[in-house]
Length: 240
Image (tube, rainbow, N blue to C red; front, side, top):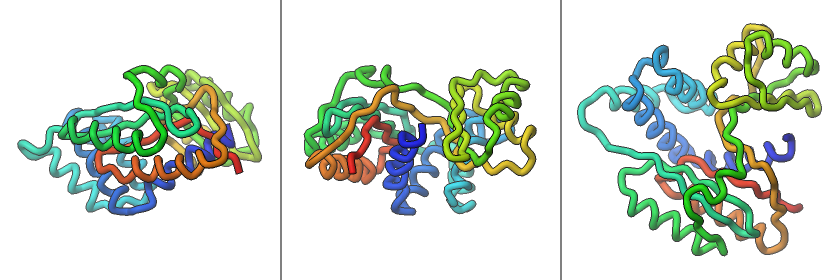
C-alpha cells in the first residue's frame, strides 16, 4: 500500500495547504458530528475520532471549541452530506465528499470543476464500488506478526496488514476503528500512530501521464478550493 498511500497523502497535502480551508473543514465536520450525535466526545465516538484527528493536524483548540459551542446552541446551519462520483483526467476514478447547506450551489461548483478538467460526473455508485471503505493505521514497527497477534487478541477484524520499510499499515473495517486503536495502544506502550483515519482505498489504480498530469493537478486544486468539499479520493498514480 506504500505507493498508494503516498499518492493519497499528496492529495491530502493539497487540501491542507491553506490553514483557513483546513480550519473551516474541521469546524464544519465537528459542528455537524456534534449536532447529530451529541457534543460529548466520550459518548460520541465519531466526534472523539474527529477531534483527535483535528488536533493531530494542528487545528487550534479555539476552532474546535467554537464548533462544539455552536452545535449546542439552537438553530444553526442545516448541513447535509453530499457525495459526487465520476471520472477525472486520464480516466481515473474520483469520489468527492461535501458538506453543504445549498445543494444547487455545491452541485454547480463540482460540475464546473469536472467540466473544466476533461472529467465527467457519473451517477451515484458509478465508481464507489471500486473503492474499499477502511480504517487505516500506519506506524513504525518491525514485527508484523506481533502487531497482527495484538489485533487478533482484541478480536479486531483485520482486512490487511503490510510492513514496508519498517512502517506497518493496518487496514480494518470502519466499524473496527476504535477497537483496533485500543488494541494497538494497549499492546505497544508509547506507540506513535502516524496515520489513523477512515478513508477510501482504491481497488485498482490508473497511471496518469503526459498532459493529463497537469490537468489532474489543476482538477484537484479546483476541487479543494470549493468551500463545501471535505475530502477528495481517487485512484490516480502520477507518472514521474
